[in-house]
Length: 173
Image (cartoon, rainbow, N blue to C red; front, side):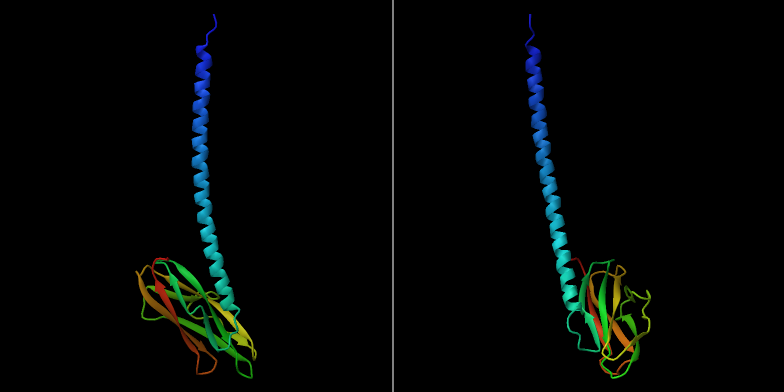
């Protein structure tokens, strides 16, 4: 006598495996789609910010001291870089060094990337030449606030040798 019960159990097992497989495939596709949309959003935001920095950095600098950008937003405990450009508008070569200090804020650090200190190296600039020095602004968990860094150039003209960077510390939008 043939046992047909085994054939029914096999088909039920197959159906259950197929249902579980389809469910896992669906959940996997939803998960991958969620990750992909998050990565696309992050990369779009990163590329937009990079393009903005490049456009500002490559723009025509006409002042002795230019900050690019001149105001930033950082998250508490994080850091961000800003370009500080010095343009020699004199007829002869000049030697300049820069100093960055937080504006009445002990929980903010303003350091130049070339020295990892508040004072930069000394740069010799021929007439018409410019130098861009990255300034790294770091929040030392001082809470949400608006603060800033003052940048002073030594060795150049006495006017236009100071600039202020506005720093907004808070959660990114």
